[in-house]
Image (tube, rainbow, N blue to C red):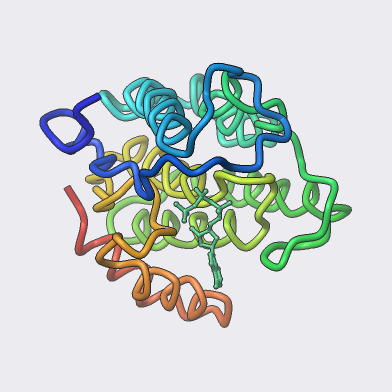
Length: 209
Ligand SMILES: Nc1ncnc2c1ncn2[C@@H]1O[C@H](COP(=O)(O)OP(=O)(O)OP(=O)(O)O)[C@@H](O)[C@H]1O
């Protein structure tokens, strides 16, 4: 796949991140043909691109993107479910980042409830809410992996549904050293941990379509 041009780039999935031939932890891997991280990146990229197009090529209705609990999990399953058995499943183990597994469901419920409450927001409030949902989603960290990509798509679906320009992040993965904004992105996420959403809102706006 040409990962850096045309429509793909417009959708904000320009680079597939770390792209080498090293093996990786394959627990839960459904696609047995995938052997290297490069092949995994390509498979994940292609799958996520399909879902991105589904939600971002035109305004997604509340029917297809209701922001309820089931949809929040289902979005992750749509993104990675053809590749990983744990896609869309709440993780059962503790991680360095994220809440305890036993409160993940309740915390996702908070996002769903807030989405319902804020559905009629317009203008700048939409950006603020998108950034807040983005942060909340990675702060909860419901899944084994793919939490960042899921949270960023979630925020973009919210923006698109509320007729605001989406955020075109410079890379699919922001985890890798090759992402030009990784440090700034992580710093903005950490600021949002203390309820200062300014830097994350600024980043969204800087990469706004
Ligand atoms: N040091 C950190 N402090 C706080 N949050 C972090 C830190 N490192 C990563 N994160 C958050 O975790 C997310 C990464 O989670 P995960 O690896 O499950 O998702 P990903 O989609 O595979 O990766 P990425 O978001 O890096 O593309 C990041 O997007 C960021 O929001």
